[in-house]
Image (cartoon, rainbow, N blue to C red):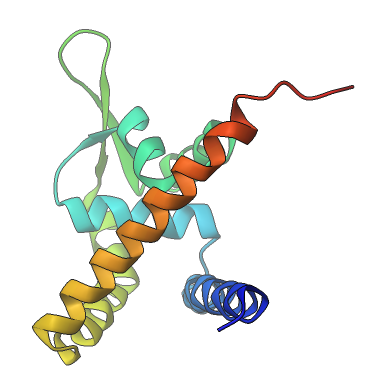
Length: 150
């Protein structure tokens, strides 16, 4: 396979995957950030800090802050004090009910898709995805460590 073919197909698959989650969020009447925040809180089943959430979602702090602010105003999440200055995000009862109607069906479909693969396919998928990311990170070091000209 030529690189151009690989690149086009890889980009198409990535965009199609991303588009599926956008469609699911819209179907449930959620913004992308609200969907992913609810998804993370439902999937982890435990309170998380805003920093942890940001690290898992790879969204900007501003995007996460606006999503959190809206979810808090809607009574779907609450902040609770933790050790030190940490504040933990938790779903309220209303938030848990919404997550149960929205992101839980998505988690369920992800699990069904996972279980439809053989153990070898599951392993290969993760191994190859991890390998590609490792190679991309290694190759990106030169660009990321080179100052930009103005």
